[in-house]
Length: 229
Image (cartoon, rainbow, N blue to C red; front, side, top):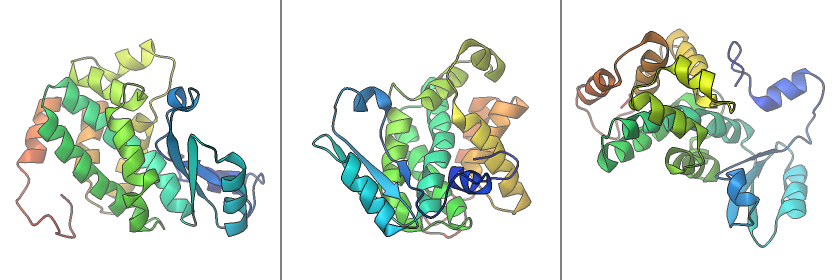
């Protein structure tokens, strides 16, 4: 996502004149390290053009690479961006040694935040139950290949964001997506507790353990409450 505008990749390509209705977005739980080895992978090809999505599906599907189609371009793109925020947070929880219960709760409620934010930006909530939503979220939060989880892990172990960014060549997109989404949520009066606390950790120097306390002490409510977690 573009930080200042929240534009998605497809919107940027259209704006720059490099894409039309035949644009197809490919996303899902697909770490390149495993795809390159021919390990079984499933992804989603999303397009406003059904024919274009089917054409891509037919051309790149194979015995080890299964492709589904979708018409929800905003949902597939936002799933790929927003899950990186939750993956950084999951890494922080892991670095703090909070255990599997805490990480599972964080990832589950993180998915709720993702779908809530995406829904008001043109996405379909159902998309977040699929490969480009919960599927991509799970692999990014748990995989040793995940740059975002790895950055969060180091934050949880006591390193600063500046130290980490100075020491790595690969980009952890969740850091900058967190900044963009947090500002958008503030502007839109949208409560995103996990994103908000992660922003405070990354950019305001908040103690990660204090952030956990803030999340755990939030007012009790029903799990199906339409308001934030």
